[in-house]
Amino acid sequence: MKFSEFYRLLENDGWYIKSTNKHIKYVHPWKPGIIPVGKHGSKEVPTGTLKKMLKDAGLK
Image 1 (cartoon, rainbow, N blue to C red):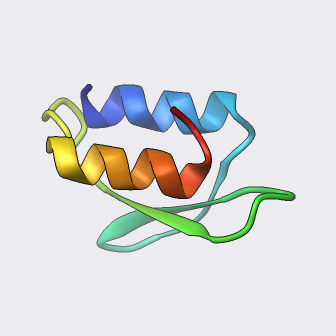
Image 2: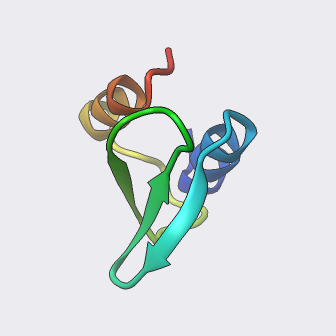
């Protein structure tokens, strides 16, 4: 999965951008935590990183 696809996946689940610096920080209205995602657009998300971010976001 590319980073741009992951951004869309989060946004479709209700996550929105809180701030941007080195990473884009997503927050959710009722899910706990912050999901920092690198600004890499068309690059592939490393497998381990993707699994961790999906778990943190409560997605499969």
